[in-house]
Image (cartoon, rainbow over all chains, first blue to last red; front, side, top):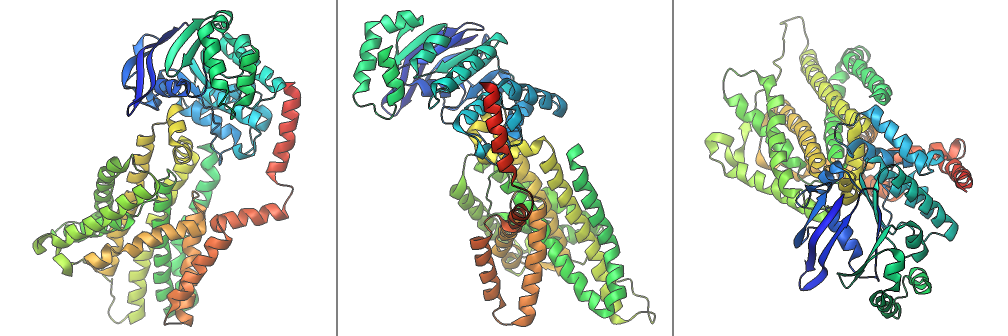
Length: 253
Length: 350
């Protein structure tokens, strides 16, 4: 469904991502994990067209999308929720989702967009909040809004960037259920995550990155048993205090 | 478009007012109606300028090039008038078209620029265009001395049956109708942008271009559309003003003050709304005229003080102030109700 081949991104002399290839099957939930600075968000940015790769090729459902703009990739079926939640603060919750519904698929009429919006709000539990200005939402609600907006664009592949970060365990469980429901509707999910129990509960397969390179891939059990992965995480933990919760859970796992 | 209905009804009401105003003013104020019509035309001109600038600002493009498009429209009218036999009213669509084409060119180049860099690029464009027009052979654009523009309306003078002021009244009433028509057009464009899917695209692009793109909005298309619509309106205004004033001259027609009024008025009235720029134009025109009559010398100091105070005390303009007052007086704010609903929503989720 999503294929990344020989992806590389250099910022000057620094390679943020290199030699990255992977393939995600249809309706799979695929996790990308790794210490901070491993190149995970850079990878998602290249997939969604916000950064141009230095080398490599990205395919969505067999179609080469490497040269397409972000908007064209969205039209081709790629949805994205951001790590730092970025709602349009002046709009209400409903208007935020409506942007994705109206523009996610070319040719969507107002009535159809309103139906898509209602569906996305319903699924993400935001229906009672639809009239609320997005700037008044709590973090959990903002995260739901990120997912609702992405869902409203009608994605075949949904990219989620650390949607669990900052959530309490009970909230994270709700979010996990939401992602599973999304997959049950036939959407392929690629997500970045630091909270290891979430990765364990959600991911069919896990790709581990470190210093911009893939170091392991396989099931959750396989990668967490891999000595390279363990050392990457333990090595990263000393200087890593801005993300204590996530890394801590990682070490426990 | 259903949500646009109230707006369209207000616009229709305004059209009726415009249609009846000259006759009513003449009946009420006789000779004084001549200057009232002229003042009203000035205010409507400011409203068109403000609406068009706001239209562009809705996509986050804070332009300092409005004087350029206004001037381009004015010069288009002047050059057109030199060709004999062309009906003068064609100057309006032509001025709009010339300005729109220029905007398409400038807009494509400035697509990647944001904030202050965009502003500086547009300011530079305005200065370059002014210099270019001034340096063109005098046979084409009249050089630094400019060109004369014949008036759009000739007085329909009935010898003996009319007084002098009545001739001026007829002329001013004719212009008043054209300004009114242009204002209605600008309002319609603004309402359509505000009440269709375009609003979602414009607001999304203004707030966060990258996120908008990831959600399928084409930022380049939205920004160029806003630029072209905005400039077409200003170009028509420039052409009309050139015909009313009777001449174009680089220093006046491309004056930076046009740009300043274009941005000050919607900020004073309330950005990203249809009502704000219109309200701003009306109130600022009234303040300016009152100050001018009270202190003939140095009234601009008072005008400046009003603007400074407005930025300090009404950060969201007149419309924002009105919303704040209404919320204070009315039932508890929508935000409060929303938070309660939010809690309820969370409860259901668990």
